[in-house]
Amino acid sequence: MTPDHRSDAPTDAIPTVTDETPTPASAPSSWRVIAFGLRPRASRGQVLAGVLCALLGFAVVAQVRQTRVEGLSNLRQSDLVRILDDSTQRYEQLQREAATLEQTRQQLLSGSDKQKAAVEAATQRAATQGILSGRLPAHGTGIEITLVQQSGRIPAVDMLNVLEELRNAGAEAVQLGNLRLTASSYFTDDASGVVVDGVAIQAPYTWIAIGDPDTMAPALEIPGGAMATVRHDGGRDTITRKADVQVTAVKQITAPEYATPLTGDGG
Amino acid sequence: MIAVLGLIAGVVAGLWLEPTVPTELQPYLPIAVVAALDALFGGLRAKLDGIFDDRVFVVSFLSNVVVAALIVFLGDQLGVGSQLSTGVVVVLGIRIFSNAAAIRRHVFRA
Image (cartoon, rainbow over all chains, first blue to last red; front, top):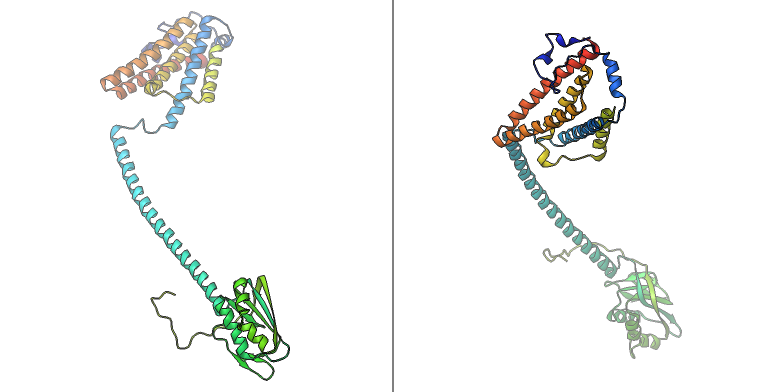
């Protein structure tokens, strides 16, 4: 019940906080003491003790939190110096790596830009040349010409005149009937009509030309020009300016047999 | 009872407010906490001994904290802060153990 006299009690050697020798004559049951102590009494001291305990709890939590957050403050100076050195070295290493990667990225970016530009230019060029060479169908503003034989026969030379006139007026794609006319197109006379690039066609002849309608139509109507010749040979012509005509016929291009491009020219 | 409630309220407040310890207080707070724990155990022991006194508890609590912080501060000024901190913690730990032993003998009679 009163173990304070026991010689093995460590409290004998070390003074307690209360600085009072605990010698209760007849101590009641410890549990009862605790239960009594737990009973709330609103004395000033009790409240003060409660406040102090609250402070203690607050401080414990704050300190635990702080300890969890910081990991370096418990280290010795030499350790800190080593860690600092390590992190500095690592930083420089990463910095170099980042610079290298950035350089590579720039190279790749400019490379892909160049490549993209080249592909775009090539596509553009292919489209242009495809239209000019008759390899691709095309559409745009243009005129439609119908030549009807009325009192005579329209010879091949008249057809060639029309084509030349259209070319002079800036026609970019020309179709006669369902044949695409290109730089290598030719006209010859036939018994029943004309032969264009080896294909015989008969009147009426329908031309479709893409270009500036206001340039091509007057060009054909020049006095003594293409249409005048056609009329002189007994034909009748109808020219219609259109906002959108379609040249759908295409020509198969054969690879040049003798000519090869000059390198370095680029094209 | 009020003390226990205060302890719980303090812990809850600490968890709720998520305080950050000011830099000036950082070296002293751990020691102060250990000193306060020592005072707490001393008070509990005195209670069981039947000699508990509110005034003594409050004074011992505050003086423990202040003295512990002062010792660490002095140690820091003298350049032996970490060693002195260790010493204070050891001493307070021994006291806490002895008080805990006394409480144990009261409660379990062993």
